[in-house]
Length: 280
Image 1 (cartoon, rainbow, N blue to C red):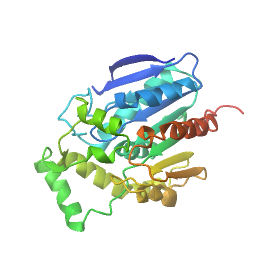
Image 2 (image 1 turned 90 degrees about the vertical axis):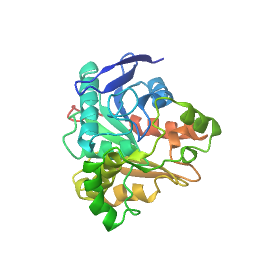
Image 3 (image 1 turned 30 degrees about the vertical axis):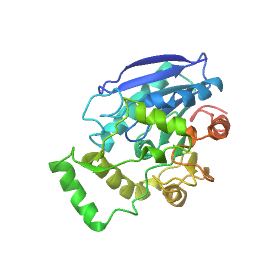
């Protein structure tokens, strides 16, 4: 049974957590674009049943965090929220390993954090449909995007179809009805930060040595499975598992097969929970 808590990070972002007694590990949940951490309650409860405490920040402009709706301000701002959450989780639960679980935009944010200066106790990461596909961006769009982001950061540039989230109609209906989700178009600044961050990530991945589990729905129409292949091709990690689930849509953790997906995640975490730097 998890115990829910919430608060505000030094950055001003909202965070929430699901604590368990004497956890064997801590997981920082990093949500995707236009959603928020509360949508991961069932993930946190499954992790809690396996002995893991979970904490989730809401990105700038998302959920209960302040800012223009859907505007993350910058990739660095989102990364700082993850870093502050990881530090808080580490302080609350000394001596246990940390993990990062990032979905979609959250996968990109997690990778940006992990290829920077992650907490020394981070033992690995789970990446779900990481936002690394830049194949649809033309050279002209890449050239114009930073200018548009600066001059009209709130301009709506892209519509995300809720029907692509899950094959479960109840999940789609809940997504549409959730007042904390951003249902408008993706704003120019967020789109630009994703595009530029994804384009720069392959070069950063070579330095990433941590164990990685990458999950992707084989029928993901929002972020094609090719995005996960970017991690496979470029990450420096010698402990890398990529799992593509045939027929699943964008959010494997919200598909009818979610129980199997989360069982796979827990099994991977259990196999990698040796705290970095701890004596064997």
